Length: 511
Image (cartoon, rainbow, N blue to C red; front, top):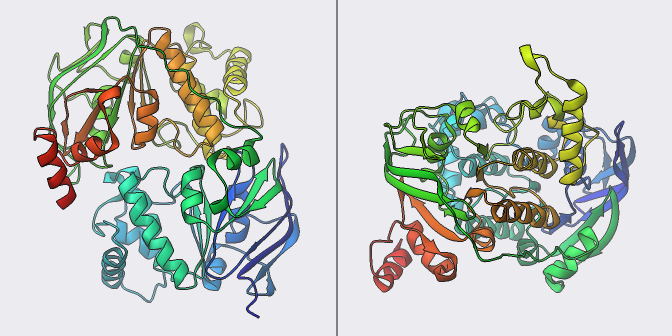
């Protein structure tokens, strides 16, 4: 009989503050798509890093195709036939796509050969990737495609995917699933981590559930419901959101005919973008990654101050030429989509990361009151149920979902007058996603104006009062949530909001 592709026997990994994996056993068969499910901090990513050789276990054994092996590092893992796409991308911003991919491949290949292989693999699997484009010009969704292409070029026997769809649109997810099903049919095994339960049920044929580092269940997810998987993962179903009728007040954010040329050759020009967000409402912006979201968010947050006077107004003040700190003084707080690097400094503790946007613990003369700062961090950790080793834990030591909860919590706890959030529930489990959405709605009910930019249509439908779509640097008219549908939003994502509904549907189908 053919042996299992991978067997983990009683794997244990301890850190000073937590036992990440506690006596974990797992079996993956050839050609199987096996989900690893668990809430944030359950130990999923640590387990995957052990398989990939980037983390050493304290106890236990790994068998590869029936033989005991000790994987000393990622290079050895790739030589065995194991590839991994990390949740936090391992790409060099200043290099091109091809150069980044080249770093992880056999050096006997020339850069030109690697470029050709990227183009061939991208065409084979329907993944849109430009090999000559610098990574710093890519959206997060485009970076995800680069990571997947890099993994596919190694022709893996086992492909590990850690939250691969967290920044992909529904259309891109469908394309990725076609790729993964084809790989599995060819005999490649897939370990799949995701918090999106409907994806696991649609794609995977086996599932292992982790809770607090221990295996608490195994199942065939195709025979489960979202509710039953949720109960296995967090012990309960996520609470239902209470979405009250909006009571809007004055306009807190006004954008008038905002036009900006792209700041890189690969960016998107903003064309006459007009937008208004009033106190006591949530306005959502949907769209396919790379259609001007980055440029719009930079212009709204104050990172790009090229707008003409009066094009951006915050709380009745002209903010077009104001930087981020000056806009925060007007009550604007911002959550970027990139957690590490823009939302948090990886090597700094959580308390010190508060200082990026919060200065309550800074005394006169610039002295930091560390006791007050740590207490402030503890309050965010407790309120948003962040699993961390305390206020001094380095940002990079947290799981992706827990870091997301901390960053969102840091801005919400500041009681902003205007909150702008990009991808609020990226990579968080169903319970944490429900909590973040509930906090956003609570903030809105308290009179805050909230702008949410997300590629998760379901999420936007759940929390928005009004919706826009951004496509090719243009912003659609707003539409009430009650009048919006997935079909209509899909049409508008192709930039077809100016056409009658039936004509737009036919054109979107052709696109």
